[in-house]
Length: 404
Image (cartoon, rainbow, N blue to C red):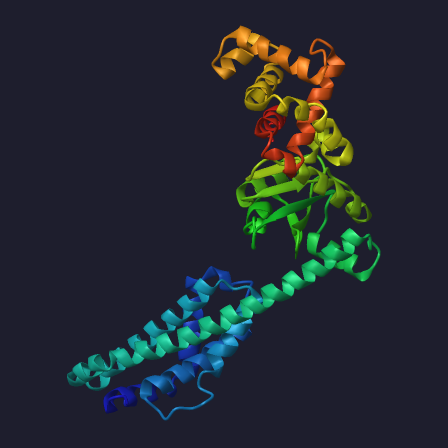
């Protein structure tokens, strides 16, 4: 229950509600630039008046009205729908609290300066009311924000599903054009799910500053995205953005120009994912075409690995050293001396291990075609999750060779 003097001052403010609301609107627009262009002035004026009236009734300690908190609830919902930042909304309530307190102090000084102590004792009444209304408006805002996010995610998922299905002429494709805006090229991204979590966080925050827009769909395999942007460097821009927000393994297709080409780009993104090494790794198909050929060959790739690296595995304890020597030799461009430096061993040790590789595989390492076979085998191993643990150096070789 408010002190009688506080109640009287609050009721006096109700008699000045219209000019008080106008002043508060001016202060909010001056202090919070995001309101301009986001919230219509008529809407702001109406909500300020409604909220101000109910806050002052609360300060006065007037009998509780079940509808008293309707204005902050309605304001929170509308501001979330309009896209006003929550920080700006909450600041506007603090601005209102200061204005109410200033006016009450001014009235007290003019009408009864000897009773200022009574007003000070009632200061908590003002800020308790502001806190209550701020809490309610914040809860309404966050609830609406979550609802809008769910709706947006569901809408995006439906659009992406239609596009990847090949429905480039239906109504959902028109929605895709609206959501993606004008674009020259598109790439598809497949992000592998890690356990129960999606290994990507707030992709739009990384993509938009680079002039890219995107749509996403979550599913059992992981998250699939369609990224739109300029044709010339969309892959490079996408790679830089995804490096910031992907914490797991991802594959990115080469660019296409038309919505109807997205199903094929989706297939290529999944192939690119098969070339990714241990997380985190964003595999850009355009820079891993050789590895992608091996990864996409399925059972043929497995046979190639079995008849090359598989035979090296039969060497038992020396197998790891043999594969490491082969990888180092390839990474060094065929220089045994440089490979020895990389492995911290003698050049003759590398040559002996390479001879052993040739003996086990039956391949002449001086024959470029034989070396191409071994390179493809290493690529196939790097693109097959079942072989990665057995041939970790193969994965490293693919990463060193592509740089991405």
